[in-house]
Image (cartoon, rainbow, N blue to C red):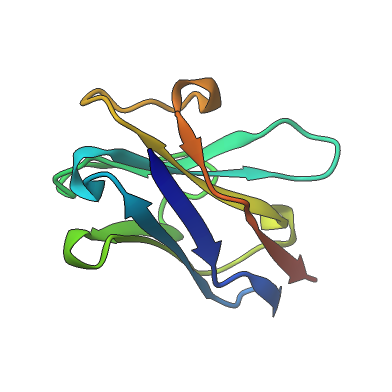
Length: 124
């Protein structure tokens, strides 16, 4: 079992930055692929980025590539999502999720553990 808690969301103007954190507790955090997803009102939950357990391999959705950076600190059991050059279309509830298998995924249903989410609102 892994418990995840997101933080760092808020209201920011377009072009601004936020850093989200995903703090984990429970089983060995470093064994999990961690993904970030987001869900805007009336839309399905969508993939944003993932990072493999070693931290050396990352993957991003095209919509955030070059603007967002995912990283992890296994000693602190925390994964970060640095979001720069934010756009109004980035507005959503952001969730982190954990997948206990070696093969990462961009599909929400393939992640076993989820945080409660943190709201990110980007004003124009």
